[in-house]
Image (tube, rainbow, N blue to C red):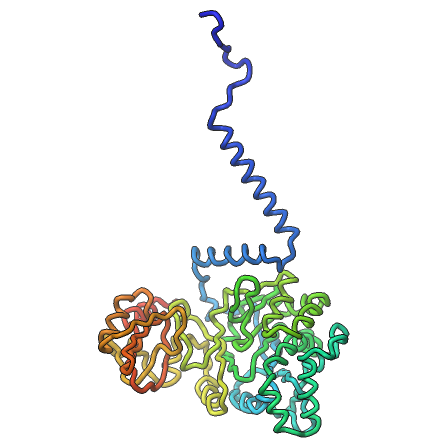
Length: 465
């Protein structure tokens, strides 16, 4: 061996570190440290912290994209948690002085077989003797939830708040018997007062019916398909904190759209009523917030209760003939219809749906109205003076300068993976392509149709019960 040569006997002395090992070691260290920081923050941050909400929202989205929607075989399966709707469910019907004429028609729309028994009517006024609503031998009073909210100690220092003053004007007009003024005021700012009802009416419902399994809050222009509601509730354990409804809003406050119906389990209500801090915060926010239904989410988030979006597609914010039937829900039950604002429309919905005895799927809407689904009729399903698209939004595609209805049909065919319906306007020559279809109605100057092959495929791939 030459002088000065470096050597080492195997097994003796330190082993030189590979030039590659240090970066790998640093990477593992950083990853472990990041994970530790994340877990620490996850444990110490409040439930309604933006970071937690963002992470949860994106994880839920990834899981839904990866695994898809869970099976809905429960619709016709034996009940896991049997529910007697009359005994176990309380309905909280929201109205206002300006829309109170809808309430008797809402009751009228319920069939003789309706299982709803315990119903609380809440509003921005209280009914007097002779002004209660009759329902199956009962006289149901209207409970003023706005007054209840404003009389709470937490709002005692806010009597001069604009919303409190507006309520004072309405209350004075009602008490003075000035119906014209009361109607004018209610229709002017009743939507503002609505935000003061939601938390108070949930508190009130729990006080009146502390042993109910389920609490269902809905508007006076909402119809509930009871045969679809019952299997949903019987699939869920009311001793778990469930918060259900049609999800709207961004990740910071995903909330159940009040018009589509909001359902809380007994466990969720018990947690909410048992948390004065969460309720007090929501009551204060109600003085300025636009959406009372969003306040429910804000209060529940403080308790770690999130909107369960697994069932959001069952709740519907539209009337039946305009309901957007999408590919991901065509075989799912529909629990509610909303925005049924005229007496004749509510009566018609009651006539068509009031006597159904089994769950109603979105797919069933055509047959319930005595129509044959277009994809069962012909291969093209073109219909003059009709519209199967309805209201447009950011998810629809409008193509201009389309010469004929057949060309519009061909455009839908070229977008077959996303198009479920199309409508061509003769006056503008615009072609509208949508990822949903509606039963629709007469629309002068329009030609419309559905994507027959896709609709047939979706129907044939429904779960067979």
